[in-house]
Length: 336
Image (cartoon, rainbow, N blue to C red; front, side, top):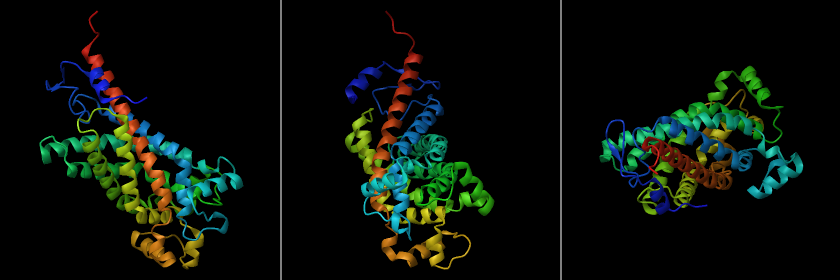
């Protein structure tokens, strides 16, 4: 049930709560700027929950996206739409097949998103003080999102490699640990970070556009920055759609590096393992020209819109809830 901003303001309204450094925090002000005495644990807890839910709820669509980005797909794995792909996968491979690799994704998403949101909030606050005297600076938002991405991808990249290999059609791995052992034995530990530079090249602009779009939408829909679920959902969906569409070519390259798609590489007479962003770009272009860089764009946008909306709405809720709880504890029991 949606909470209106008026109701939240009424709930959180206190005369003033004094922080540890004696600076007052008025809860009727900018909700996004949490009081300085709130622990980084608040951001990390909210971020971890948001990340796990984001990846879990939309995971079947992510599986379809990985397959639709295949440059030389098996005839049995050529799909016209996300819905048609899901229906055929469930019918021919079993109802749980679209969820294959979800376990490693959940293991990585929690800590990755905890670092991601905590770093974003900290860097955004510090840079906003420099760029705009504590106001909402779009440059600060973009830079903060980029810095947070470096930490997020350092944790998430190995999970992405395992996940995408298990998502592919006719994946040879029996399960999570078989996939990890096989990659380690045949390709070495470095295989888990083969796409790291490409992932950063994709995710830094993705997250910069994502955070700037989200903050711009919030300025229009929620200028007072109260907790308002509807505005967080709409802003998150818009941010996810715009950033996903723009960065699809890099995502195609990342998928090829992660999966090392055998049929595609063999057709190009590439022996060993494909590495390097420049080599990957050339390979994708030679295999399918410019259209190849936008394979799976529909599935990527369909995945990112709700997943980003889920992430922001869940994150904002937990940030609001944990902040409210802490403020109430510090205010002490209400007089009878």
